[in-house]
Image (cartoon, rainbow, N blue to C red; front, side, top):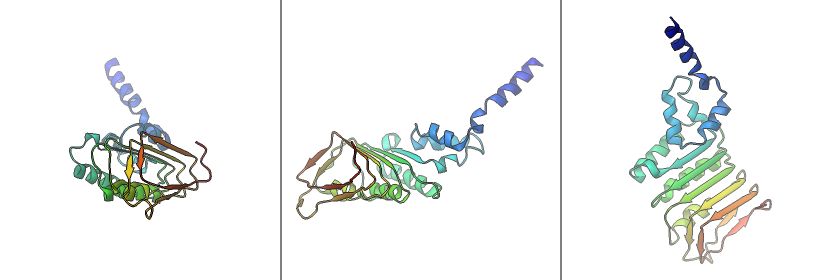
Length: 195
């Protein structure tokens, strides 16, 4: 009899996470990659769609065999996500070469959902005007407050006529780690930058 009561007690106590408010669950899930957060949907009906309203998105192609596979996954996440929920932060980490349309789609999604923090890390050096057209020209946002670029490289053949401008009026923090800019003049319009 004690054994039976022990099992019942364990069952009741074992699902305390489901009683937490969505905001707290989102905070907990924000510490892991979105791929792992989605796996929690198998826990119970309470968890089935909780990842779709996460305000913090973390994408990394580290656990994917190819860029097309990763791209398909990200497309699924963005299309299944609750579009009524704003995106507070996006972390994007790439190993290898990323395609222009793919990265642009993620950035456009983030900016259209009022992203406040953006962290992009590349583990390979991109050259020529590839990155300028894709990444630097994409940064125009009324809501972005914190921008971190890591291991990014940029070079542009025609830097006189193609000077990208980042229009980020709400930006307060700009972090550049191990970034290289060659022959490129770019302007950052952000009167509120503090660091």
